[in-house]
Length: 572
Image 1 (tube, rainbow, N blue to C red):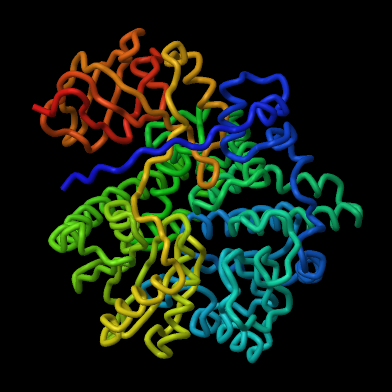
Image 2 (image 1 turned 45 degrees about the horizontal axis):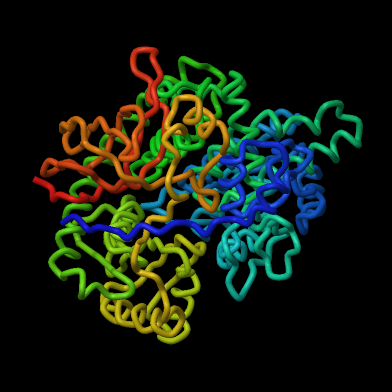
């Protein structure tokens, strides 16, 4: 079932805002202004423009706690996604570079222990006799886990970026820009961004004690920060764009950890030309696949090794796991689509929940994302966890804060949800299978209360028409380098009419075309992924991105088509 989405154009910026961005190309200035950039300093991605390290609440106490344990055993408790893997690798690498005596990590297997610092994983960690546990990308909701650690006499340092609940854990220190009352300028930090700030503070304190060069250590691993930030799809505010751009510069310059270089090579990408989409769609999914299907430790070890050959071995394993993940996802996606399509678009509820007893719980987040894209509504996919419980993963749409939605359900219907947590756009939850139908009804009811005007159109937002003379290799290259693009700072999408010159199906379901701008201009290549079907004739209206396609060492501009719609004549 192919569902056409409306195409809308971003409101144009005022000429004064464009002029205020200084002496840059007017088309680039317009793009930046349409994304909220109003002063030239927001395009300065130097490290000096980062929000001050000292501005992050509790960071001094947290750094002092770490330094006080530099001669003791410290265990990093990570999470089983890319943000957690990069956070774990970053902290371990920095602390070892600082000369800490004994640093190791543990990551709960999602199928055995579930998410976060649970009492069970604390007891496993306690068998190694640590003097300190430090959580990365988790911990702010681990009330019971911290209680257990305190009972065992093990202090806990929490670093996290997830939204806290009504109660905070009784940890020795908590570093999280989303704590209530925080005034930190960039509350969009990923977990790896929070870890980077803490490591930066530790380095500065050590340098003040006489450790020459310690303050420069964390910057060596900005490639890890970039990877985790992009893969976790946090909004790329100015602060996060600095972190990502600096990390990309290290990758392009040949200074990345060898694991990232190996994963780029395994996925057919070039480190020297790496952009944020390479991290988000090539490197990230391979690491994530390990956490979804097996053990994220494979990905962490890939990021920790300094042997390129060893990293390549890990990258090959991760690639194989990712292939398996794609196969599992394809089956689950087809089943989910069959379910929602059978309902009919007019009967889709305001929050779509899907479940099948055969589904793999490590892949439900991807299915939720696919259903959201299909239905343009918040979507929650469930799989059986164990016994009577289901594990759910939620993905949302702009304007609907999905964690707040879950909290509203939990408040209105106590006991329906066992536990939940997450962000505005993504969240996780656990509930008893017997409560699934009650949860579905409550989620729809709370959507009506909280978001009565939610936009379910799934509109493709474009930057308007692209002048014909801008469809060039020069401008395509400039767009590639003008980022980093990502969540909250989207890559430019254009709209326009084109005459079909040639078309053919490639791969399983991709439409390869040669097009001529309807207003005149040179013929350009285009690719529409997963959009093959009846042949188009005459003039079509496209929503597209302008990209650089490299084939056998030759670069050409290429349109990457988001949506194609016939004009003047119908599809044959």
